Image (cartoon, rainbow, N blue to C red; front, side, top):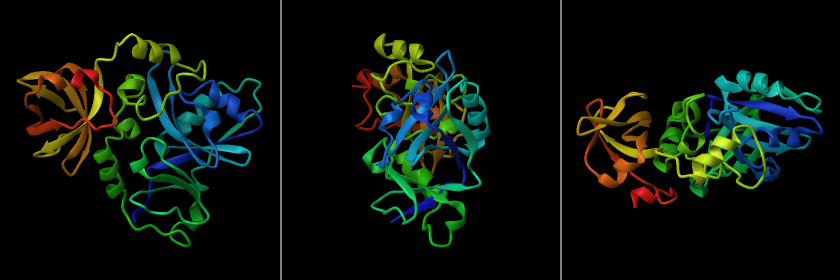
Length: 278
């Protein structure tokens, strides 16, 4: 039953009596839903509605813990701190204290961890935070990060800045809507206007789509071509599976896609709602 340590992940601690209301006005999802065994997947956007970061929010006692990309933790602490004003909250980098685990395929979270199911898909498994000094001692892992990477690629799950471009990507390209990363009922948050307009006016023209790859894996950023015309861009990939940002109109049109000499075949999962791909 695979469990792995995600060394590329870190933790932001948000504490204080105003912690929930503080985050609620800033991120894309409903922070009040975080509770025992229940994580919330949310994104922080620019005021213009472009993606900056995404993270899992877990609740523990008098604090919220954000499972985020480790490289983005300093940025998140800095940006969120700008909005504190008079809110009774404290923010800090908790990467040295806590480590992030992921488990799937029927694995059970180890004792002594703060665990919650991955809210994106039932098949995704669970996330857990554990005191760093326990990893390798009372908390053991039996899978690699490469194993987890292949697992999430097979499911079509994006992995932060490997698949989204900071200050450029639109949230619904993510695809955050179908994966439960956006609340359409909770009220205002930073970047909400563009996100809502994109959805309700049908403005989305491109989506991150799972693809199978035959041939050498093309690096992220490699143009995707159909009949010599650029129709998208490669994002993350491993062992014949990848994600690519593709124009929606080409999914229905069919034809062979290529990227850097490799042949790509779009693989639209059942959870993804793409009317134009029907």
